[in-house]
Length: 576
Ligand SMILES: Nc1ncnc2c1ncn2[C@@H]1O[C@H](COP(=O)(O)OP(=O)(O)OP(=O)(O)O)[C@@H](O)[C@H]1O
Image (cartoon, protein in one colour):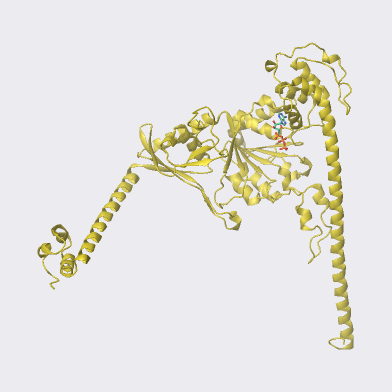
């Protein structure tokens, strides 16, 4: 066997003409040819292996060249989920109808949280006749190439990945990302694109108020993702029924703040304005903030301290991730403070080695305490949460629970009280519910101002027996019949919803409704009182048990000490 045969000698080897191969790798082929004279199978395999290697090398070289070209002649921008720019881009992609080229969709039976799904016209048998029940959201996971303003763009999306553990317990998360590759070296094109998508987003979302909610545990230690985004239809300021001038003054105040950034900076005053809206549930605190956000074109970032997963670090990272010119809303801010009941139930003293006076189930039951501490909250208000000209709003039903440190100017600059419905508010609500234009058939035929319905009582006596009236008169009558400071606007709204199209019935039936509500409230308060009594008894029993255990332990300890004393006086180690 001649291992060093000339390559040319190999042309006659089994396997046909390998001249071109042998000229590339002469020694190897010399060896293989020599070897293959006895084993043609090995020679063919080697040929294939070599061919594959060459093809693979060529393929990699090609990819490398394309990558080099991309790096040299393109710009890639990354948009991260949770950042407003991500939302802008999603709206842009939907607007550009890029989904038409997509072959991958996720199908949701529920409404997607973002408005970037594709509206479908129901079934193909009756196109456009029925709105589809599902939503189709393109995944954009395969790169999509399209043209924008004469430039080629490449879009690719990666989904967010999270472990099911909050980050305090080692959970991790990768936010979803969209990569946009622009095939140009001109950076101005990217800024142009971002500005266009931003303007488009503002245009598209103008009729809505965008509310970002922190409504679930958070998994990433570094960046906070506001994954729950809601589009609420913008509400007219005039639809909020408040005492005269209140809404206008809040709007004026907020506008003035937005326009006076320089003024604040010149005087070295932190550019921050905090509002506290307090009052009973359903009196319009949240609605005011939503209407204000709509009027000012701002987005809301909302955290509720009543949520169990919100603690100091959660609040801190949420607040620091809110962009400029937004509203930072903390709902139920009182949850960071103990209620009077909780304070009253505190044990008088701590007994080392003994369990707390209140059993754990007692603390947990009905407690709305948040894990956020006062110092954590103040840090957020003084620090990250107050930067960049954010408007800060807090709402509470229990203003008395709030610590004076929170209420000092600089943290809370303006307090607005909300109350249960006044007669004027009830009148305005009714007038809004039944616009004159929609009820032209209701004509005045009866002067209600002469009727004696100034105040409704628990009986139905005093109801007028009218058939129809003008909306203005009916509104007034409704206002007269609703007792002052007893029902919230939300409750009255709930009642009016039961007679959406019958304003006359609404006025006639309100007395019965009031009777029913009072009866229900009485029963509820009796039930609650009974529950409180039961809880008190349970607490007393538990405290008695703790005291008994404490006494037993003390008695044992004293016994041991006395025995020790006797032993030492007798000079023995132990009494027999
Ligand atoms: N002053 C008001 N003007 C118009 N609508 C109101 C008013 N108050 C309450 N409503 C209606 O009642 C519902 C609840 O109102 P909202 O959530 O604003 O009350 P809230 O004071 O924030 O209550 P909570 O303290 O429980 O959060 C909304 O649907 C809203 O339309």
